[in-house]
Length: 327
Image (cartoon, rainbow, N blue to C red; front, side, top):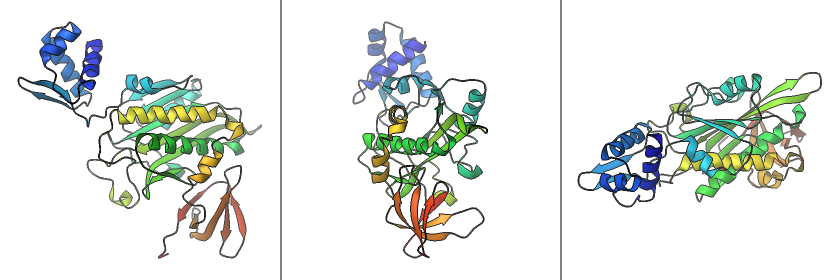
C-alpha cells in the first residue's frame, strides 16, 4: 500500500491543475478503485490537502506542504548524510546529542515538522509549532579546535540564507552571529552545540541545529515574538517547500563544511551582514545593553565594534541587537 500511496501522490503532483478520476488513477497504477481510495485517505492522514469532487476525481492542493523523508532525499545532492524525518520530536538537538554519545556517525541528520521542547541559545525555549517550519540538526565530527567552532555556525548561516533565496525572491540577511532575517524579521535561529576534549581543546563532535519559519503559524506567533519573528516565505504556495528547503540547506552546509579551512563563505557572510555599519547594543547577561557601532568582521568571524568611549573591541561570542533610532 505504501508503494500505491506514493505512486498516487506522484500522479497527482503531475496534474495539479486538473482533477484526476479514481478510475484513471486505478488504471494507470493497475490497482483497484478501493486501493486508490485507501491511498488517498492515507495521504490525507499524513497532511496532504486533496480535494475531491463527485464525477471529477481528486486534485492535490497547491498549498500542500508535507515534510517527508522520501521527498527530502529526492532533492539531496550532498553525500554522506543519514536523514531521518519526524512529524514531531522533543528537540532535534537533544535527540541527536544522545545519538552522538552512542556513537552515531558524522552526517546523521534529524528533521522535524514540530518540536515540543525546542531549545535556543542560553537555555531559552525555541518556538516550534507544527506545519509552519522546519527544525533540523546535523551531527558533525570535524578535526577542529573549540575556538574555531564559530566558523561552523557562520557557514550554516550562509547555507540557510542561500537556500531561502533559491526558493523565493527575498533578501536574507545575517544578524551576527546566528540569526537570519527577512524583511526585518527573524525567520531562522541557529544553535551550535559542541562536545569538547578538555585536555586538548579539540572538538569531539558538533551538533548544528537550525530552525526556520516557513510561514506564519495558523494561531500566529506568541505575543512576545510578534514584533520580532516573521516567515521566510509569503502566502504564495511553493510546491514541496519544506522538503526542498531542508535539502537546500543541507546541500549548501555540507558543501561549505568540506572547505572549512578555506572559509569560502566568508565574503557571503560579510555581504549579508545585518549589523555592519550600524548602531548596536552589546547584550551581556546581567548587564545593561552597551551602545556601540559594528565596524567589521575579522577572519575568525569576530565582530569588531567601537563603543561610545571610543574603545575598539573584538567580540568572539555573545549577542547584539540593532539599535532603533528612538533608542
